[in-house]
Length: 350
Image 1 (cartoon, rainbow, N blue to C red):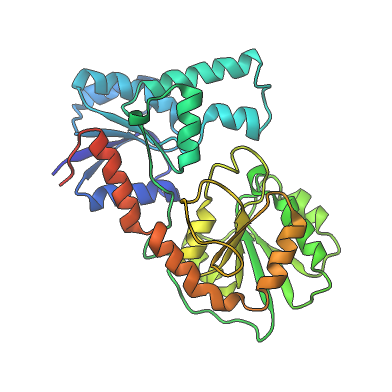
Image 2: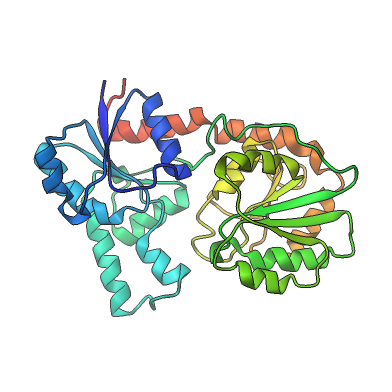
């Protein structure tokens, strides 16, 4: 049985990690978890432990583990795959606005991340626009990159029955309230539907932008906030909604991703409204007559109009939403994507 070292002190319960681990196991890989005491010296610890495998996998957000993993693997002639999910440079410069793109600090961060990424054999991204951005910004060869969608854990996110009010239409937003999500667009859209008492907006979760969102929603009887739920209870909460919202931010990053919640809601047979993005598969069916409706980013009027139109028949679009998920984002589709990435590394899983 081929084996893979899961390298780094990562959150193995994070959805991207859980899905990738499940995919690896479904392809016949044995997982070897390696959580080094000190990331920078992990290659020494791995040597002392006598580790060996067919592949080293550095999971998402663990940029700090790449250098040591690459040093160790190079000596062993073992390929390294890095699944960053985000660019540390892009996040600091364009999401957090911490550095001016032309500043010395931003350029140093870009140079450091470029060195990390070029040291591995494969960089795994979650969408094609992300892949193109990484190739351009970090000077990566096409053969050194591949895509595997984020997806939704199966069978956790599946259609389930839930009670609905006789007339109430619930629009559900959930997430970590970060700038990428465009929560202000959701609140502004809710304000535009305040004269429609049958439409209720629920914002679930916690995060840095929540307090500001609550202030923005002050006085709106059609908006309700709920605290975060345990992950295992999320599918049942999704099932109670009629429409699920994706993201609406206008940033470069928001235009390049398909957020977790879109995959999860579609897998639960719930229609989704989200911002338009070229990250979705070419030719994917979307619009008011389908289970996925992409609208202009940061446009509360477009969101309000979409919700009002769908409020007349959102519950009839569940089948279309689930069919779209099964066609484009199912576990078997993700497995095919990962298999292609591994084959590009000349690995042949059993």
